Amino acid sequence: MQTELHDYYNQLEVNNQLMPLENIAIGDFGVAKYSEDNRWYRA
Image (cartoon, rainbow, N blue to C red; front, top):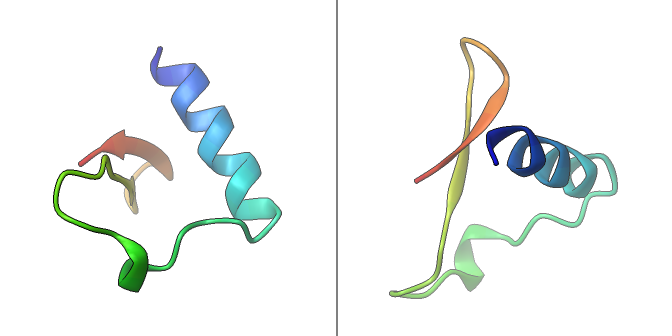
């Protein structure tokens, strides 16, 4: 699952389709890119 998550969010990042932080609401799922390994993780 971690590989699929990483690939999915990398593709969104490449296409500049990530949701702006202003649009995130309580209860939404979130992910963060860890700068040490450039991988996406659930937040």
